[in-house]
Amino acid sequence: MARKKIALIGGGQIGGVLAQLAALRELGDVVMFDIVEGLPQGKMLDIAEVGSVDGFDCNLKGTNSYEDIKGADVVIVTAGLPRKPGMSRDDLIEVNSKIMTSVAEGIKANAPNAFVIVISNPLDAMVTLCQKITGFPYNRVIGQAGVLDSARFKTFIAWELGVSVKDVNAMTLGGHGDDMVPLVRYASVNGIPVMELLEKKYKDKAKAKEVMDAMVKRTRGAGGEVVALLKTGSAFYSPASSAIQMAESILKDQKRVLPTCAYLNGEFGVKGFYVGVPCVLGENGVEQILEFELDAEEQAMMDKSVAAVKELVGSMK
Ligand code: A3D
Image 1 (cartoon, rainbow, N blue to C red):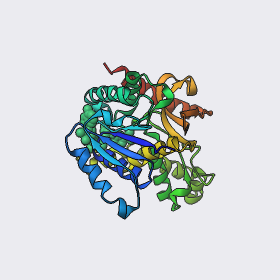
Image 2: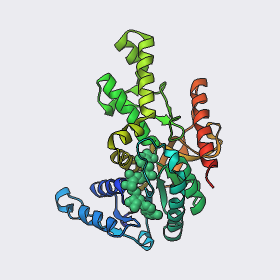
Image 3: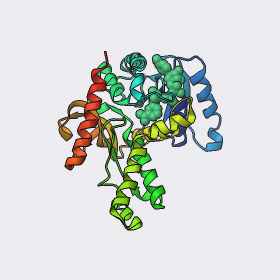
Image 4: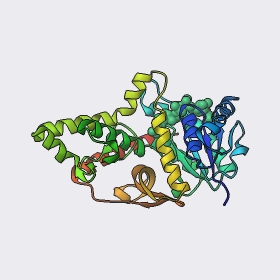
């Protein structure tokens, strides 16, 4: 069986971690494309030279030519500017739309059969644009946001309850903006509702709700919290890990259920837009969208988040 090939478009902060993780997990051969001469070549050489130490054996190549992504099974896109303190993700739309246009053309011409995972912000708009320009089927063009937003939510719950993050299950839906929808009702520790555990801990329903509200708020602002600390860019370890989980599920046909920015055709009452929802990711990309009942409060939050996505997408020229 031929070795899988992963192409990374963008060799910046996230791109570098993506390459290292893909190599460490031996997901396949990795090629990194960037417009800056020497940057992808230098990063890939750096990672390749510790194969003997880390115990991986795959071909790593840095390039400034789209020709080298030929034959890629999965393409992960991080090309584009990250935000700086005080900026919203939406402030990046003009400059990153231009970058995404050239990237999507490069992918279309050179890796027409690839699955594409977009990370560049503003996420929901960039995925939409990437699909439009490549013309690839919707199941092959998706965005990473929900895996990370959910991981952040899980982390805060684990810290609050003093339990292993491995035993926390929680998910966020909706757009990758401040209106994202962390699902409180379904958050659990090995199936035990988190709200019940908080109420036991504080012996007070109102206090439990206050603590959960604070975790929801922190989840929504978690990207900005990292930006404010770093001052020169945005989170990069966590988005890379999250996208690699999605890529691995596709490459190994794992059928993981992962919150994915996917194209909706009526699911959750949304038609014709990319929004974060739970998807089964396997060898055919998005194989299923798992739809379930939202209560009135959750649906209202989802509607608000979708309205923000529609406005954002509508603002693209
Ligand atoms: P950064 O370290 O600046 O890397 C971006 C790379 O893109 C640089 O190496 C550029 O040279 C390269 N680039 C610019 N234009 C092009 C082009 N036309 N073709 C190819 N490469 C190009 O940023 P980063 O890696 O920290 O972040 C990348 C993107 O991910 C930004 O848009 C962030 O906002 C976004 N991001 C998304 C999430 C999500 O969870 C969705 C999280 C964090 C960051």
